[in-house]
Length: 295
Image 1 (cartoon, helix red, strand yellow):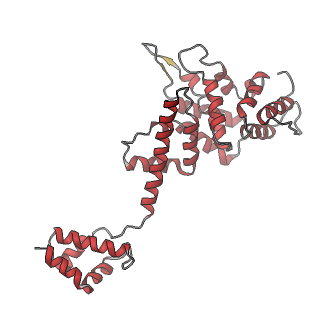
Image 2 (cartoon, helix red, strand yellow):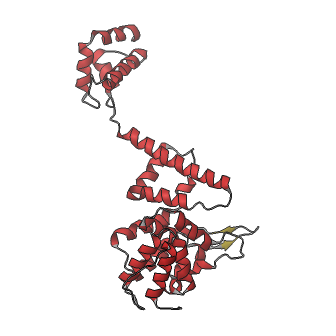
Image 3 (cartoon, helix red, strand yellow):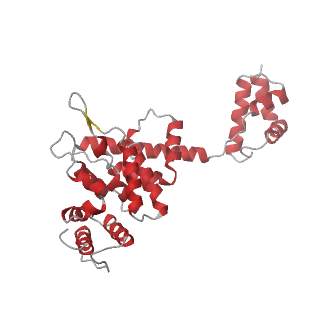
């Protein structure tokens, strides 16, 4: 290193914020001080510039060798410059600590998983899973707050899932994705957006569109799921038994009339069968529907 750790971190923070920085850090920093410095750097306006200072002055190699391994990985090889990509993802990610830590670490699993396939293709199969194991190693060395460790781990493991979205996904698949995301859903979608770094404008546009479509579908399904079920399951059978009617247009018309009554506030949604049966019994116009359509 060209200076003490504290001095280097202050230089990195100056590069990341474009302002002079102060902190009571010495040449040897405690784990807690390192985490404080990384938090300030990662959430700064220009974190990529600060990261370059850590690389240049030797801190990254000592602090995060898993990240340092990415720095010259792929230079001149048949795939994108992973370090340049990583810095761009960090810069594009919202300045929330969990998301930016995940952005910094999301591709560290590419180093041990790179394979050159026949025909010139390069693959990184399983790199999210390998990346989580490398993060576990990092989390044993550095005192990550317990409440963010699992969140970062989840984001590294899942960072490719949103980009895989297709409009052919079933509603069940979309609900499962949202359920798996849990409290990290917004972070996962934001990381996926930040992970789009192509030089081709149309490719970026398509990638953003797919993720935004997924987010919109999740919102629509949540709104739909939050609406109370207007009529209880099995009401049709109960109506047929009470009023001795057969399945057919009459029953369908009666069910639609009951749904309309729920929407207008004349009936409760999702109540017991008797609530609707009594309503039908008391309204002659509904009986007329049955006479007209149950034959």
